[in-house]
Length: 148
Length: 148
DNA sequence: TATTGTTATACTCTATAACTATA
DNA sequence: TATAGTTATAGAGTATAACAATA
Image (cartoon, rainbow over the protein chains, first blue to last red):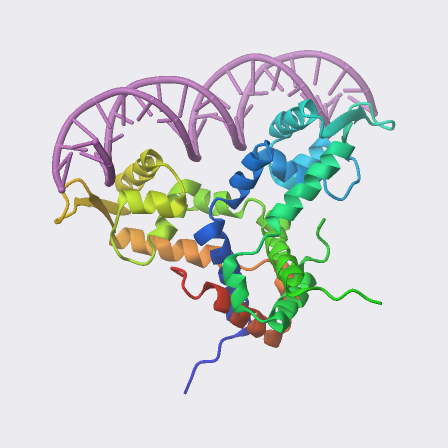
């Protein structure tokens, strides 16, 4: 009798395929490469993506979302602010809090990051247009609450 | 008249969904977290995954595959060798070359890494078993030449 | 002369601890 | 007393340059 993959096993297989796409081939160094092209560090790029929803957020909230220390968030924002991509303003309701605003230049850079991150692996052309459409639909179901 | 996404646009959308899965939510720090749990550095984990096909490879080949400098590959392999996960042996055909062999302990660790990397995001339970199956099939098409 | 790998070194990335201001 | 953010500092990660051995 042939073993049938359980639902959980199938989910694990799917996720491992996704992970493999990120580890191997042309994508190994994608993040640092794009960041370097855009003259920011990978950490700054990550922060910028995390700020993508447009809502100004406290430094602490950003750090939590990035799963990093607040002091490192400070370092990243320092760099982004020096380059004019974000601004800090004291919160009107709690003077301890500083809200991070993305500037117009920052929004332009965010768009460039997204543009470059979207370039698919060449192996994607093994899929038909219909298959790609299916892939988008399935992946959208599991990521539709993300900032992009 | 309604715009229809071109094939290329669809491919970009699909890839951006994949990328989003990696950047946000519970997966932000997945790689360093798993590496820490297994008492190795993220770089060492990456190297171990890259050596997964079992074939012993020159240090230089590993560095090229990881898109890093040979000196850094040396550093990573030093660490893995100290922990007993790999061994270096001079190539019988070119005495300049050192081949990196994965030990039995290394193979066990590789399996543990894969085991942990395979744990899917919780959002995957929004998909039915059939949808997950479809997802595996599509992703396998674009990754079937990868080491895992 | 060119290539593989290593060592020495320096720079970047990231976290911990101590501190200031505000709540 | 607790929390947001910053500064000082140290450690880990990664690259560049110089070098030894071999081709």
